[in-house]
Length: 120
Length: 110
Image (cartoon, rainbow over the protein chains, first blue to last red):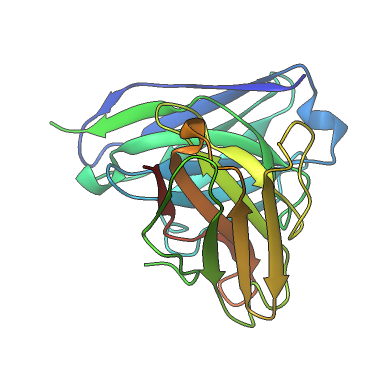
């Protein structure tokens, strides 16, 4: 079955760029039919959708984060990535990647999450 | 804050039925399908309900959901200790042009 795994640095300095990758195994992003998402949970807070990407590169972003966030896909490596620019302590969170059958559909496969701390 | 509202907490004793409400608007629940997620401590969130009331394969039938107008609800029957955790409703919002999670409900098994 499809499995997702997040990877990236656990510590990022304020004002720098946070970069995470989600590797997909057991299925191919390029086969289409699914949207690939990033979600985060800040300490003590609920889940927050960051954005989706489709295999052709089409993206949807959370309007409140859109100016600072970029999601990209590398079908040759079967992975997709998240960049958050100019991070602050408010970007400290556990970041999850997930898959859904469409923008309206539930996210049925999730990675275990990776914790990122923004601190100098 | 979220455009989807849930009560912050719910509780019950083992075997009881617990219901969680999710209130939205005409731009989200009113016109798009609702999904429910379970997030247990130290684990990845899990899709419990999709398309308003459909359980993905493997989800026990103790979990059920419904929707009416701009509100939805999740019911957990036969509450078990392993059900203790956070529950979120979510839906696409046409006004925001984005997917929104509610603030979440913490379920405690007494």
